[in-house]
Image 1 (cartoon, rainbow, N blue to C red):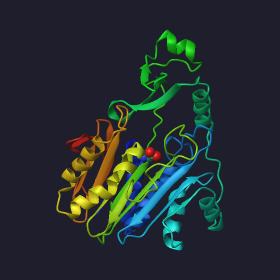
Image 2: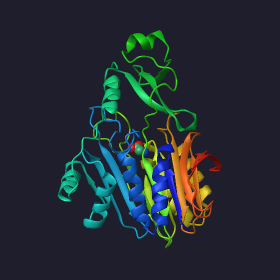
Image 3: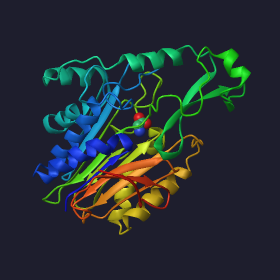
Image 4: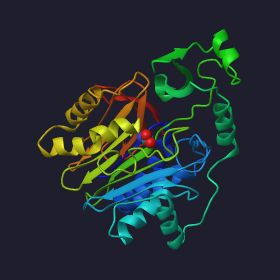
Length: 345
Ligand code: GLY
């Protein structure tokens, strides 16, 4: 059964590429890598690859992982100046005895493997970072999800006791505090802080998955999220299921969400229920905040798939041989269902 799933609206075109690859007899592993590479090169996506938003120091750092049906996996984290980190992750998987390479070591490995250096920071991303960096101390900018997967910046002030307060965008306090112009809701570019996660099942029934991201916008330099961590952002067991978790990476890292879903399916749970249980675990996270999201998706080894999210706003692209011969569709995902098709191509 041919199936491909990709997270978020920016996963729509990568999902087409992934599905077409398996429909043309490529392996699931090749297909997820191809889909991820498309997103890494897509400058309109400001949360993945080149064009991604930088860290607090203005540097773009990328994380990625890949895993096949046989338990082989590889990841890279805190990689600067290499665009196709998903392919570097695959080389880690195929050419080293290790699972994860980070920072300078990962970059040296990429250079030795023949990957070429690329400037990852685009002018658009630099301009947003410069606006952000003009914020006075204790005024933080957060990305918050609105309906339908769009994103907006919100301004948060932290008081002396460490309590956070969201500021009214039109308030005099904000206008006088920050040179960043107060903007109307939705007027800011929908820059996201999310990975793309891709899962596929090929004609031979093999499962594979890939995750790639520039991570949280304006993160503390050195921060690594869930995407390169096998078991957090991605987990595949070819006999059981393949799962991806996306959203605020720290949530998925503390809950090992992708691994959690696969293990519950191993013990007989249906895919949708397994995602709901993983969401229930995330809901217990002491650090969970109102502006945080978690989106989960899974393909079981028999081809059944499911997705759930902590809050409305998560979307995924799905193409399945069983539905109109592999038509790529974008779904709205909620805590209970993955049934609302919002766009078809
Ligand atoms: N889920 C992507 C990240 O938090 O880095």
